[in-house]
Amino acid sequence: MTFALFLGAGNIIFPPMVGQGAGEHAASAATGFLLTGVGLPLLTVVALARVGGGMDALTSPLGRKAGMALGLLIYLILGPLFATPRTATVSFEMGFAPFVGHSGSALFIYSALYFALVMGLSLFPGRLIDSIGKLITPVLILALAVLGAAAVLLPAGTASSASGDYLVAPLAEGFLEGYQTMDALGALAFGIVIVNAIRDRGISDSRLQTRYAIIAGVIAAVGLCLVYLSLIHLGSTSTSIAPQAKTGVLILTRYVQHTFGPIGSLLLAVVISLACLTTAVGLVSACGAYFSEMLRLPYRAVVVAIGLACILVSNQGLSQLIALSAPVLVGIYPLAIALVVLSLLSGLWRDARRVFVPVLAVALVFGLIDAAKAAGWQDWLPAMASQLPGNGMGWAIPVAATLALAALNDRLRPGSLRPS
Image (cartoon, rainbow, N blue to C red):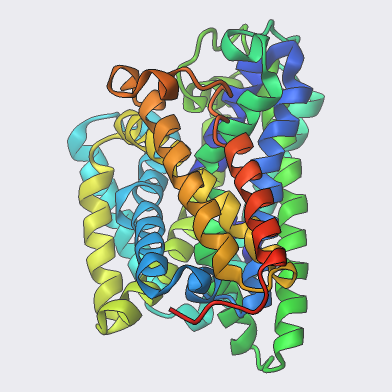
């Protein structure tokens, strides 16, 4: 179930783009992509399992208001604003548009039916292991195995030449592209879904809940590694059939048609539809649980509201959603990475607030600077900020330096701060 929850739209469409852009540097780019696309989500699952699966517990050192603001932002990104609507647009573009066309009316009808099914499955979160883990995931894994094996054994050509930023910094560029999977943010939401699913199986001991959540996370990480590596290889060897592709949708569509013929489109439709559906159900379930508790509204009413909002947003189209989400993800990811790392190191702090507040404040500031650059707003930034190095990683050194200073301050000051 955990593997299926993570494997969604971004996990399918972005690895081929990384492979095509990186070309002969695909190994370095894949390493960076796996760090943010697999390593960080796994660490996030571990961190959440240790605190019981709740985002509130993870952000508690920030104080109630700041923690709620960060949680609200992350759940909005994962829910109605970007991640969940994107699952519908990707599955439509890759799975159904080849058969029904790309018209706006076709997308609207598809998204309405798609989210009706998502809402139906999400209304009963206690059955996710049965509906997703036992029924849908085996079919998904079988289809992925066929596609992955073909990518390795039946490449469409040889590795292409690297282009763009992959020429000078393939590892860093792959690291940044891993943001687009949204898996680290998704893990912040899926943590409670995973722990609740374990509780629903009758596991009440907190240590066993943590153990099983970590095991599930490791299984999902291994599966994601195999998927990413095969798709990155597919992209790096498919330049001849999809030159200068602007999205992974075109690369995958051309590859399956080239390798499997007409039946390839059907195989891709199965993979994409199931992958996107399972992720959408997990996201809507997690967002429904979060917003229903925060707003004191019935869970099922919130699920329906999120589903309706996703229908509207998804009709903006895939290219528009990707363009809008990129700067947002560049801005929020430094916060998410810093939050997970600080939580995993929580046993070292005398008073967690002394460390969490300054480190996350610096991560926010530099994340916003990188977001402005990604959005093309460099002219609005002060000269010093616009010249910061890092190729989208300009936040890393300031955040690491702040962490070192905050940790030193925490060790030198006796006692702890009063709870806020």
